[in-house]
Image (cartoon, rainbow, N blue to C red; front, side, top):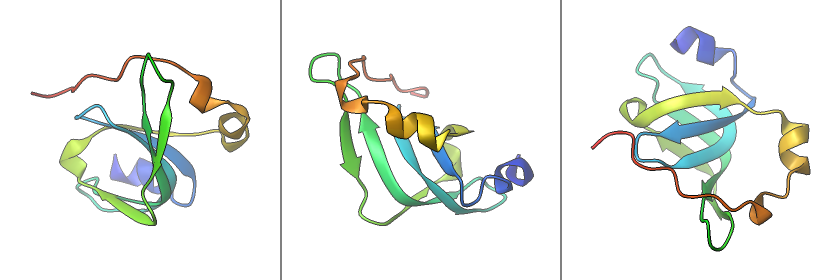
Length: 97
């Protein structure tokens, strides 16, 4: 799996964690344990009341591989065109107790 994710280095990705967090950033690096380093990352905090809030990380973020549930490449143009702050949705529940 790490070899496939290696093809996404320097691409915009979205990471879903086991805690239900959604983090978007440029994949800067990873290792065989799927520990990820994201550059220019923001967390998307979902709310069915207020819409989505963007929380910038302020630089590089490291995510432990054992907390990563899914990683996908984003279409940067489609993502930028979306008014994410207007999207209202329930928060994603924890995937692991």
